[in-house]
Every structure is written in C-alpha cells, then in structure tokens.
Length: 103
Length: 218
Image 1 (cartoon, chains in turn brown, red):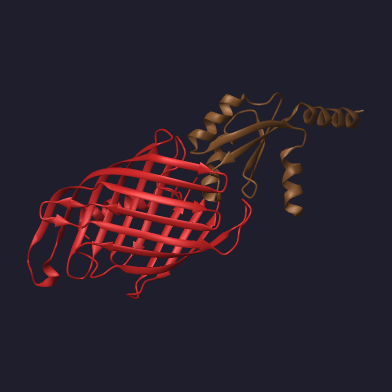
Image 2 (cartoon, rainbow over the protein chains, first blue to last red; image 1 turned 60 degrees about the vertical axis):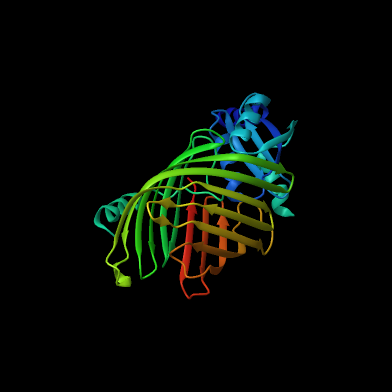
C-alpha cells in the first residue's frame, strides 16, 4: 500500500510540473548564459533549468503552474539578453536535456 | 609595491573570485577579475546594481623595471549599448573611475616619486559569436604629470562549439599597451578556457612575459 502511495505521489508531482521553452537572443557562451540559469533557479517554484547554447533556448521546469511570461522576460533582460518567444511544452527539462545529449 | 597596497591586494585576493566574460554580469551579481603579468597586475570587483550599471573597486600595480605604480580606484561601469542576435552579441561599455596612484622612477636613476589623484574614463567595444571574439578598449589614466593610457585589442576563435556544460577552448591574440610602462605594444597569444563559471586565459607574450587572466562567477 505504501508503495502505491509513493508511486501515485511521484506521478502526481510530474503531472503538476510545467515546462516553458524560452527562446533567447544573444546567448553565445556558457560564461554569460550561466547568469540566466542562476536567476531562473532563484524562482522558488523552479524544479529544473536546461540551457541549450546551440539552439539558443532555455527550458524552465516549474512546480505547479508556469511562471508569468512578464516575470521571465524581466529576468532574462536583467541578465542582459532578449526573449523572442515563450511557449509551453509537454516534455520535462531533463527529457530535453537527454535528447540533446544523444545528438 | 608599497605597504598599504600590499595589504589591500591581500584583502581583495581573499574575496572569492566571481567573474565574467563581460566586465559585469546580471543584475544583483558580484564580479571579480584579476590580471597577472610582469608589467601589469590588477584585482577588480564590481556589483551590478541593475542590468546596465555596476560600481566597483580596483587595485593595480604597474612595473617596467624603471618605474612602478600602485593605484586604487573606484569606478562606475555603464553598458551603453547591446545588440543581441540569434548567434551573436555586441556591446559598448563606458566606464569612469577616480583613484589615487603612487610610485617611483628611482630605478631609472631618477629619484622622483609620484603621488597623485587620477581619473580613468574608458570605452570598450566587444563582439562575440560562439566561434569568434573581438574586443577593443581604450582607457585614459591621467593624473598630475601622469599618463598611463591603456589600449587593449583582442581577437580570437574557438576551436569548436560546445554544449553548455562542456569546456570550450579558444585561441585569443591579445595586444596591450600601457603608455609609459610598455616600451611597445605587448602581443600575447592566449589559450582561453571557459566552463560555465570559470574563465581562464594564459599565454606568453612576444617579450617573453607570462600573462594570466582569471574570471569566476558564483
């Protein structure tokens, strides 16, 4: 019974997570991009952040609902970069990370 | 190096290095940079109080065997312009500093000591992609009978693109001239390694002098 509860709990935590794909201009090196990663990790609902320099996007995975677009844009602009698009996606940050690691 | 500056250098050296590829980083961040070479050594820390401005302190030591200079300055850095494109970034930076400098020319047989306040306005332009880096900067360092204007040019390329978590190696050609310190511009081919928070550059100049530049972000 305990195992069942644990499985349900794990499943539900994944269901509540929301991932947002943030397309960023100007993100050309890891040294600069880590400011974005740190700032997004400072949001208290952040579960995972994945930075992809090659394609110029960041995946922000949050607990419960996604972060307001205006808040994300402000964080990225404060880090020195521009946001071109924010969209909701189904995959987790880790799944996308693994997809690109395989390439 | 005079005694008060030795203590200040020691104090700043104890600060955890927090550094960047740009002269400042994101809002709320603290950045520390250090340059080490025979003729010029500096330690600098700044705090970005918003996305475009930072205030900082800097200590430097100049030495060309004939004359020595030890300086301390407070400065303000402003990002005048940034162009963010899909695969590139271009910046124009303006900074202004106010400081105090002392030193001597005694090793040249000229027993004159220098002690003066100075100003140090600077302009920097840089452009980078994932494979190319270019930088040009000029800083005036002017005080009473002092002119140590400094010009830097950097150009280089990375050997290959890397993912966010990998170390990216670059080859950078660095040209630096400090008026009154360098007999001629010092050219240094440098190997640059970037791994997220860690930014290292090292090389040996055309005058046989090793040079290191370290940056770290935390």
